[in-house]
Image (cartoon, rainbow, N blue to C red; front, side):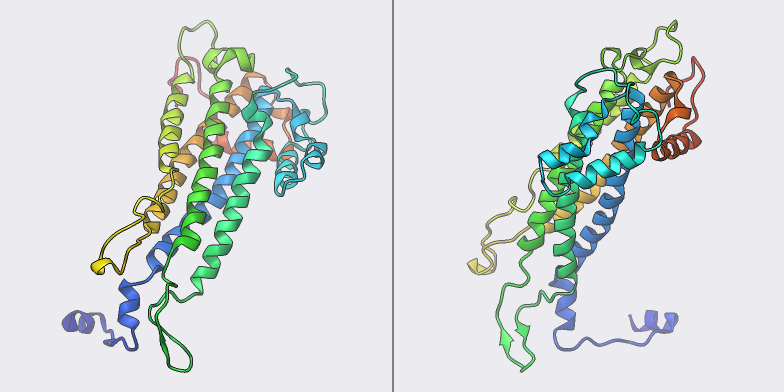
Length: 313
């Protein structure tokens, strides 16, 4: 190591006062992994809002489910804000103007967007607040007090933030599952009123975009498996002759959250892609809300509308 330090032009560093132990006996790695995953979840929830709003446009969804009076009737934290975000995306378009809704009651996964997405944001907010506190905390044992005492303690225990990661993964799985179900409805003519599989040419016998949903369904199945609580998976141990009789695998919970964000990103992309196709088949891209128009144009920038006979993606 000395030769390597010389090659890099670095001065050797000698840890003191338990600094070396802190590198191998702390929650720093798990907290760092969690913090990065939380940033991904925050961005993902915005994408799911946009995907759901574009689905409303493509399905001519009943916007009564997004009426502010709905939030007044159920004053649960987060629901008013979720309704506000959806309405802001649709603002300026013909859908909010009324008279376009095809059905009295849309599928549940359209009607419960505000409730499902608000639950996920509440879980994210709670998890983030705990992680932010942990990032400026000491998890050392024994802890050295300002007056020099060595105090045996359990500040290293990861349950306070580990269970919030479990909580967030459950909420994210619900959001992604609902997104996948909306994608399924988009390719089902009985729900969308559009050609089966959102085919560009009804005269051509093909599955259209239905095959795209299969991948989203597989991703959400894996998402739900990854959402199972991780902090209970190693509830008791007998290491250190029984002194360390409980170990919490919070690193596993953080890793699963990171894995889930990758899968959820794919699911959101599928819904966005299919919703844009539904908008095109209805020939109403010029009637979208200000927010949904920007989303639609971004989707079409990266995934232009295909010509009949071309593969779906």
